Length: 163
Image (tube, rainbow, N blue to C red; front, side, top):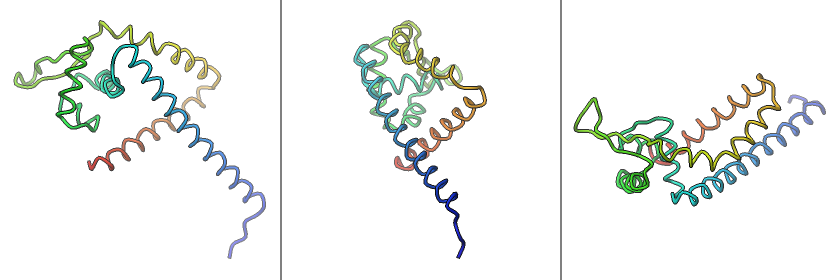
């Protein structure tokens, strides 16, 4: 039987408390970002899932509707309805895929993006101010943590979706 010193026990308790605080903060962040997206969507008459799909297209597009459905974990028929709303609102356009004229790709239309970015400007300003308080090496650790956490979230989502 191995002996654990008082210092090691206290260090384990501190680590457990910090990890619990991180998890609680991640849950709170998730809630607050969800609420922010909901309010942004309400201002521009988009559903939360519409904003998610717009973000996916902005980051990975242009995408075929089926690729967007896979990335979002949505059924292709559901994606059709979302793309119809986004196209009617002037957010996206469906174009012929230049590499396969039978296929369609969805691309962002820039005309309304300034309106959307304006609604997120308060959060972006706050994020710049928060990041200004950290050294570059600290920001690298935070970025690594967030990237790894996002990957874990994608993996858990894929597992639940049956991918």
